[in-house]
Image (cartoon, rainbow, N blue to C red):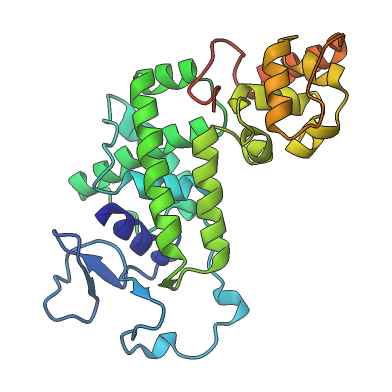
Length: 304
């Protein structure tokens, strides 16, 4: 999709290093090299991208091995979520009264994470679009940081369907970009891994440490957090952990716990005669409350 191409071009630009873009995207989404005489020099956009094996424009600065000091800054989830939010397929959140000041501050606090050149504050339309994308990216970051759905809805003035739509669109674009990025010159394997991790964190709505657990069918974001806080940190742990601890972490819900153990590959998932461990239940509840802004109603990622 066009948005995936936009994303890859921005990904090659990397976090803003002051060097500016080396190319731009025209209105049709086609990418033109910076030396192209038909390109508009005042048209801000993203860098060109080239598949492996294609010729690059002649650029003396690009010749020779890069020094250790030239290593690109690490790509962060917020940088990726902000970049996704700037693509044509994403509907950005509106800036409400007071948002410009708040997100301008966020922009400069986390500028090193953002991919591309930050527009000047004097370019009102471009700068407001940038901030609207940043607000949208922050919503995605909150979801991936296990902020409760109700808290996100209140913070951004949206409904559950809006959250789900933003998450689904971003996940789809990251998945497409991840697939394409493997063949794109200038995007290394580490960056592809970072894109994949950012995508999976959106898919499950969890922090990095819960990715393995959340990938087990019927676990989801809140059950993964409860299991983790009870000392069960991976699907391998689910196969070996004391059943009483698993049952306690899952609030004594025997049928749910049995399905999860079966999906994790446990040879004997039956919990007949097993009583829930009360200390595991207490630890899971305390940890979930601290990490997910409360353990209220089930959220979008609870039944994955």
